[in-house]
Length: 217
Image (cartoon, rainbow, N blue to C red; front, side, top):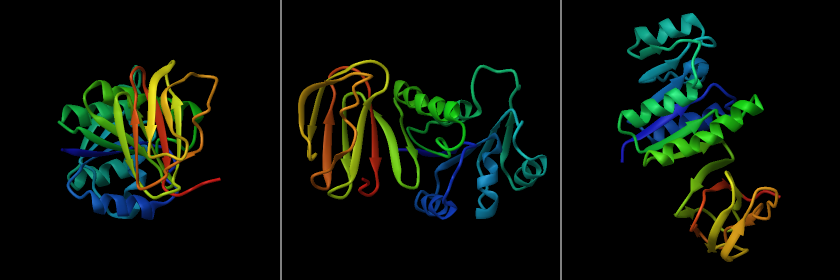
């Protein structure tokens, strides 16, 4: 499956984590949304594409990456889509079906919520997208999903857009069978993996899954 790594212009607290992830996904289509190119300069990595209205990208950085082979796609400032939205659409158009999004949550809360909503976009286009942070990952489950991790990993489940029905959880500390989760009743917070694998089944709706890479209180 062709992979893409998309960098949004938010906060990436641990550059070493990003560097390690890039090294372990060598060959992935690497896209920067506008000013996110700042995350790559200290890592000596060249993106495949930089896309956006270039209102937050330093012109010298743009020239630096263009001179080293990156494609620069400049979009109008008056537009209906965020730069991260454009970057994910580009990855899907290039045939990527597994997309990892970095820098999506730090900074402005409206940008963070907008980036979480983009999980719908990829899934609706037969792609899988995961927001990756140093401590956790976020993704959607609309039918079935499998988590692999360590016993005790914290997993929170939230209904992202309306009620989610027919939820069955296997391999979790708190099991559930044919349950319903609705906005305003977040009882799916802070579940835990019972073993190294957990399985989620959903009959109707989309469930936001937040898995921490280690147990949190």
